[in-house]
Each structure stands twice: as structure tokens, then as C-alpha cells.
Image (cartoon, rainbow over all chains, first blue to last red; front, side, top):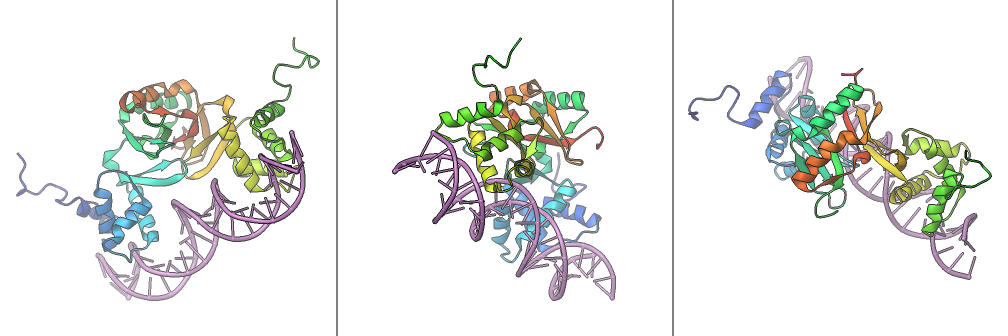
Amino acid sequence: MDGQASAPATSTDPVEDVLGLLRARGGRATPARRLLLAALLQPGHHSAEQIAASVHARAPDVHLTTIYRNLDELERLHVIDRTYVSNSPATYHLASAAHGHLACETCGAILELPDDAFQGLADAAKAIHGFTISPSHFAIPGYCSRCQ
Amino acid sequence: MDGQASAPATSTDPVEDVLGLLRARGGRATPARRLLLAALLQPGHHSAEQIAASVHARAPDVHLTTIYRNLDELERLHVIDRTYVSNSPATYHLASAAHGHLACETCGAILELPDDAFQGLADAAKAIHGFTISPSHFAIPGYCSRCQ
DNA sequence: CTCTATGCAAATCTTTTGCACGAAC
DNA sequence: GTTCGTGCAAAAGATTTGCATAGAG
């Protein structure tokens, strides 16, 4: 039903799509940002260091500082989510894949949990404290099936 | 009904009680540990720095390193729980007061949640991944009633 | 005396910040 | 040309580690 001939409303390239968001905010399209977005587009969870490595593969001169600054900005634009894993480095992933995370304290594996698994918790937090949780911004520590 | 004359099975002083645990493991009772435990005995959540300040009030020579090492060991003995709050300093509290935590991303307030609020989440993690969560080892970010 | 705990210093790791230059619009 | 993004260096904060000494048992 859909054809490649008739272009979608936004864009044909998700990278350019996000760059459009940046430009709408007065931001600019730079090579570093294209590479960063390309790295984030790969499914899974990425640490800042991992993303840097991916960017460096094509542009060795891009500084880690730049990675962090762009990650911050993309988070502000709700393009990506930053997930904290105990005191380990944070991981980032596209916001469109919003979900909760489980992090094994032993082997470090990161598992995903559907958002509705947090419903009861969200309800309790709201009912007891009027608190709204951010399910995709943290990882729940524990032990995976192989490590417990 | 209880008298100070007839000592309970464990001890009359919670500090000495824990020291007993330490000694049972070949550990030793030091002034630094007594002060550390005294600080932890106060209700609420404490950061390492906060605990250090409390200890320093009586023993200025106790080094931050010692605080961290003892905190680690007490965690290993399950005397205390360490709770991670995003990328902020971890907080510690007695394990007997096990509960979940909510941390406001705006004002930094830490609220407590009864353990059974995590039941649905725990069940889902177990059912989907065979994963066992540690409800008291992390704080869930979000927005409190005053900040959202 | 033997083994553990401590003090001290320095390293580690992740993330942030200040400043001057170069690029995007 | 003006503003924003970047590279570089250095700071920042929290926590860890190595080593020699002091203290508990």
C-alpha cells in the first residue's frame, strides 16, 4: 500500500529526520551528529564509550566531549533515552523503543521489560506519593536466570 | 515488660550487635566501625559523604577510604543496603528497613515505597526473563507531586 | 605474634566545563 | 558575519587500590 515513490511526511532517512528536529531548534547539521545518530540507530543499548568508538571508526577526530554534549542535547529533544545502571556508565537508546530495563548485578546483562510491567509500580507511586515515574530512565538491578 | 537487667539474646546495643556479626566473620571491632554504625543507625538515607561527616564529628582522623571500605563490607554482610540514584552519589540505609525508593529528578527528594508495590514488576521480570529484582538497591527516577 | 583495618596518596572512571577556533547558516 | 559546534585540556565528583603502619585478637 505504501510506495517508495510517494515520500512520507517526515523524511526517508531517520538520521535526516532527527537533524530536521535539531535545525528546527536553531541547531546545525554536522558530520559528528550524523555519525552519532547513525550509531544510535543501531538497535540495542549503547554506552557513551561505545558510541564514541562507533563514531571514531569514521571520524577519529571527534572528541568524547562532543559525544557527551550531543547525547545531552538529543536527550533534551526526547530523541533518545538515557538509562542509568547502578554506578556503571549510562546507556542510551532511541526514545521510540521506550521500555524498562533489568541489569544483572553479576554478569552485567541488560534485559528489556515491556512498559506495562511497570503499571502496578507506577500506580502505587502515584497513589501513595503523587509521584510520576520514568520507566525507561533506569535499570533495575537483580540477578538473571543464569546468575542467581 | 523488658528490663535493662535481663539482656536480650543478641545484644542490648544494635551497634554491638552488628560488631558481633563482623567478629563472627573474623572481622574486628574498631572505633571507626562503631562510629560508622552509629551514623547508619539514624533513620533515613545517608550518602558516603554524609556518613563521613558524622564520623568525623567524633574522629576527624577517620579517612573517607575507610568509610567506603566499611560500607562495602557491611553491604556484603547484608547489614545495609546501597541504593543507586541515577548518577548521583549512592545512599545507604539499614537493611532491616528494606523498601523501594523514588527519586525526584527535579528537586532530588527521596520517597519510600512499600515493597509490595514492586510485586507486579517482580512477577513480570521473573515470568518473562526468570530475573529476580533487588527492589531496595535502586531508586526510580521521576517527578514528585510538587515538581511535575 | 598474626592478621586485619586504617591512613595516606594516588589512580580510576565517567562526565562536565572553559576557552579559542572553525564551521554552518 | 554571527552564532553554534567542536577540539583540547583540564576539572570535577565518587569510588577504588597499593602499600606501609598501627591496632585488635
